[in-house]
Image 1 (tube, rainbow, N blue to C red):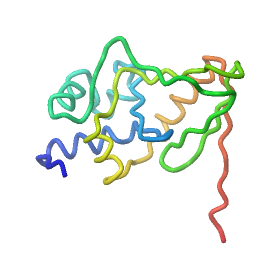
Image 2 (cartoon, one colour):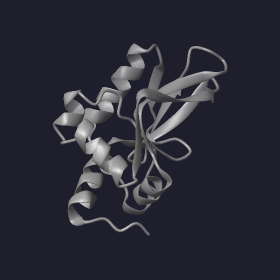
Image 3 (tube, rainbow, N blue to C red):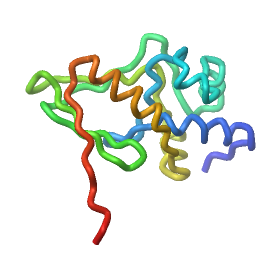
Length: 143
């Protein structure tokens, strides 16, 4: 198990509010200069630090996840959002500039994430502006 000093653990806990899940945890850092990130202390400098300690990989060219069919679901803090793409196949999502490393993924799965409603709205607005159709799925948690 990865051992972090208290400052690094606190930084990663803040970073974890920007994690969605689709088959595994995905860090969605779409524009590191946007205040949705900077107000939480996530900047190019803090991302480079997380990269230096082996939790993320940063690439200014960005990353995409592809080969989606017409529909997919992504989860934010355990709540699903359904995405409908314009094409029947070979669709992709922009993941932004950061990928979690295997140790970063394990840490997210072990420690969990926190919810940031402003970030959720930011991401869904970005997807909507790309022409994706979104719907939040309400789970019945009462048994």
